Image (cartoon, rainbow, N blue to C red; front, side, top):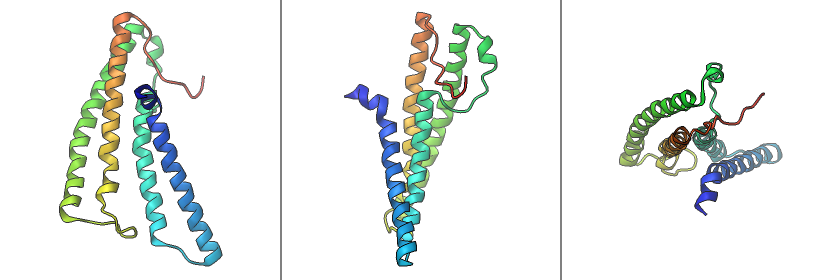
Amino acid sequence: MLKLLNENAERWALLTFYVILVAAITNEVLRREIFSYSSIWGEEFVRYSVIYQAWIGAASAVRERAHIRIDVIMHYLGPRTKALVYMFGDIVMFAVACVALYWSFETVAVSWKFGSVSDGLRISKVWFLMAVPVGFALVILRLLQSFLHDFNSLRTGRPVFEGNQLFD
């Protein structure tokens, strides 16, 4: 069960938020075109779904090594050096993600303290602001997994996982 969750957690979360997004947009378009009436919550719901998709997608991209990068030099490196470069990148990104995670909780804490609510849905903004810490926590988890995988590849002499290429 954990293996299945590890492999597909982001995919299912992204699919869920995408279905929510499409349903809300379809609902709003039909309401505007058929009934000449729109709601304030539809746009807000879609906005927060996109925010969650972006942060969960970032974690998924870390897992798949699908972030945009310039890897011309990587083709000329040996497997050991390549693994060390990827591990260095993971360490740097881990540090950035830890700092961002720490500071993203401040925004959530302020919202929690003052009890701010969203304009249309009238739901606590904490639920929507948590997209950033949740996203960075997932990024940190995936970076740790990537680092351990690269370390094992380095130790055993196997080629490091470079991600799936969009174009060959």
